[in-house]
Image 1 (tube, rainbow, N blue to C red):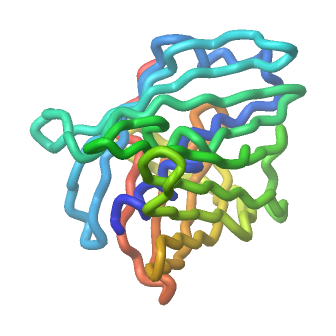
Image 2 (cartoon, rainbow, N blue to C red):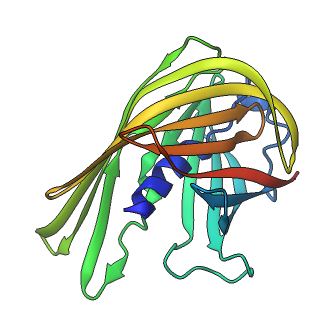
Length: 229
């Protein structure tokens, strides 16, 4: 279940905020971001690294390819957290984040196939306090052929921009906007609800993310620890 919570945090962490798609000076192939992930007591548990792999123009959209991988604290790849390839699209300053990249589409597991369908989350070019953002949903099926044995859905709801603030992480001091959201995860009889809080910075995206359970208690969090542009 903690993987599902992690995915929710990762969901918005790939957002890059800018007023103009063509003015994405930091967003070029080779940019790398390192995040350290902590448990509820603040103990480091793993590292994730996100890299911009491509920036292209397709049918009027600026399309940004990203890749994320996960390591333990000794720098070794985590086999239980596969590398994720992801796509951002931008047109007229507005970003669209495909939710399909949060699971390895088409992956074969002991003869089973994992398929993913989902929405695009949208982000306005001007993220300002008081804004309400659109919801998103993703559906995941695991089965053989046309038979679906396991189906899960995840929704991101009640997305709101709260306030402009200044904050510090090991990567530096930033000015940004706090965004909150609720999430719902369902898989068979298993249901999980919670909420999240994100600190967004223009030109980078999320620099800190916190996940809470339905009672409002902190579960885990991550923050930007290195940024190479």
